[in-house]
Figure 1: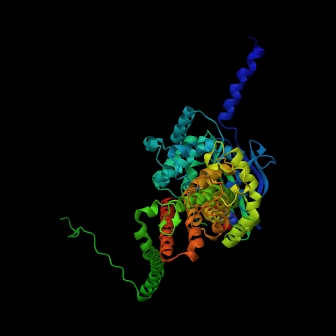
Figure 2: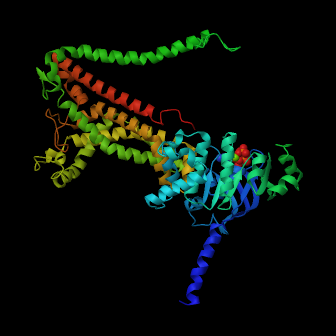
Figure 3: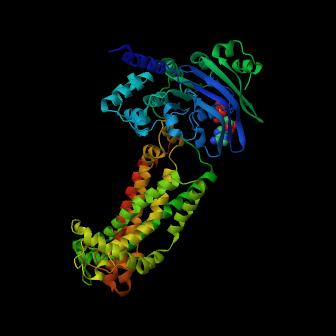
Length: 279
Length: 325
Ligand SMILES: Nc1ncnc2c1ncn2[C@@H]1O[C@H](COP(=O)(O)OP(=O)(O)OP(=O)(O)O)[C@@H](O)[C@H]1O
Ligand SMILES: [Mg+2]
């Protein structure tokens, strides 16, 4: 065997390793959004670096959920929803003509504010549901392993390992939310979007979800909306502050490393908001 | 005893006083609600009293006798024949209704959706005599070719599609099948609009959950909408069955009555209790009338039973229970 033969086989794993540690960054360029005639987001440009947690903060109604939902093309399912600008995943526009929304959503998973497991399906089937829905073929054994690793990563495994066949709707709210996280993880997304994932949870469940986020960091890119400033500081590396007023659509006032945003904000409004003097 | 602990640890009697206005309103509503029971009870009582004479004469043979002649009569052929018409109707109406309902609730664009909803409602509003006339004058002459084809090509290995006197053209008319087709058109709007209604109530959170996992629309329908509406769909089908069993005039127009159990659904000759009552009512003596009332009572009991079953299934399912969303 010659060196020339070896070279590609040696390089391949290196490339894959780089991919695995997350080159799947997300970026938006001048994204605006409308509901009917009403503009709710105005030219938002943000970079959400690969493998990091980006927190979106801001007062209610400033467009955080709208922004999050346009990242994985859930926005367009609302009647009358409009959009301008570009959303880039690994540099490719997710709104490029010919790109299927379903394939975008497979790579960019989402956890909602209200836990929404499929209530009649078993816990096991809930976690495996994404495989079926996305048409991913796996063997029985692979599926069992995937369900287990997803539940472990979501911090739910020890609580449900003995009752995987019971319905997902029978879990507590906090467990349901972690089940939804496991369900999203099972399809191995590159990005996970979380819209106030802890707002319906008690402090213990909240801590578990935060631990889960900590665990996932580095493996995938996370964007999280939160109203809890301590949570933003605990879980995120980067942060973006959104603000809207009654006649102007939502904009990013300031964004950057979380520490900087909280400790030495450049904008007075940011400083007011993060210190609770505002909104 | 620890300080502050009550002497008795038993449930207290809890009294919530009711204001006079509330009481008046409530008793008014209760009266309205009770009237439904009263009417149902009176109908059943009427049928029972009027049918008792015939039931006494016939005894147990009322349920085993297939013929319907003065002196010897029973529901052993009209009842199963009527059920068969209803089954044919359901076999056609259920797939049509469910696909239509899924289309209207999940796929149709907004303008088409409201148009189709009113069209389906309109279909329910057409009087049954019109369906019957249409079936007799238009459908029957045009469908005979298909019936003949089915009898000749499928009748060999599906015995119930067999038609004995295959050479005579009139063998293929006035059959259980043709009556079933007409009845299927009449129950389709009910099943469609009842099941569309429950499908459109499938929670948005779960729908979005499926989409966010990369599901196609059909995948979402299969994993969220259909499981959610299963109970409602079963109920809708049973209500359709009840209506099919009760359909009178359209069936009476089409069938040529036949008093032996008709296993061959494509063959001339069919029957059902409502059409029997409609066709024989004018010409019956006292006992004959009483026998018709008794047949009516059997039908009443059957449809009541089916409807009760349907409503229990609906209320036990998620569709009927209050949902979290
Ligand atoms: N489906 C919709 N149709 C019309 N307008 C909408 C819709 N969803 C949101 N909006 C409007 O868009 C604006 C931004 O809403 P969005 O839900 O993104 O805010 P948010 O920042 O997530 O608020 P919160 O913190 O309360 O969740 C709001 O003014 C809201 O009224
Ligand atoms: Mg929101």
